[in-house]
Image 1: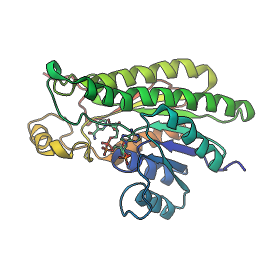
Image 2 (image 1 turned 135 degrees about the vertical axis):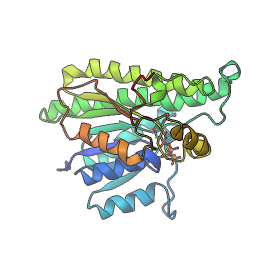
Image 3 (image 1 turned 30 degrees about the horizontal axis):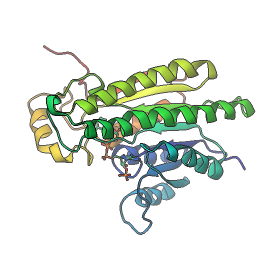
Image 4 (image 1 turned 120 degrees about the vertical axis):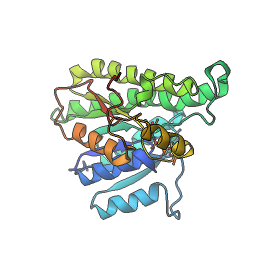
Length: 263
Ligand code: NAP
């Protein structure tokens, strides 16, 4: 039977920004399917910790195992969501990786380039293609539905970092993917948005936290603090709740003002 509450599928929901998005959506009236590469029900951390928190909020949570970089995992993940909830109202393409090592662009390896691009760009591109087909079919049976897709990119979509070029290239490409899906799906009443976080306190940035503490103290971020997963999550909820229904293709920067050109 079809869920009465809207349903979101969040990739990379086990920690960091994806975890924050899953909790915020649950608090905003969504039931949530949260993806992780690892499902360990006994663990105090990871996707089952998120499930526990979502349960406490009175929403349903479905842990969905899968690797976004593996195209063969995409359809089974979407099938699992539909089998459980009967609908998909929101896809949040959040899962992503940083390069394992920061290496000068003159020495970037093919292996690192392929690893980062396959998770951050190729995976979400083709997952979105499949989700879009599903949403189009869904609207044929339920034209009142207004499904949405959100891409979590980064300020690295436009700020060039020569020591992690593959990450910047992946996010720049993902930003274009968001624009292309927005243009294509507009006529189907499926809104597509891009959320661009700046420097957010998560596992991804923990290896370079001292470096960013220093840069923030020196003025890197106009609002002069680390971003938190909750900052990004609030932006996703604002897009999901319908306030921006006539703004497909919107890019929302969540970076404390890093987008402001300063002299
Ligand atoms: P994080 O703390 O490292 O968490 C990454 C999440 O992605 C985890 O839940 C991880 O899940 C999942 N993941 C990684 N590879 C995956 C794969 N192949 N398939 C499925 N899930 C995968 O990172 P984060 O900081 O929250 O970043 C989340 C997103 O925001 C990323 O796209 C990142 O590029 C972007 N972003 C982050 C920052 C920042 O400063 N932190 C800034 C701008 C943009 P498992 O390991 O459990 O599978």
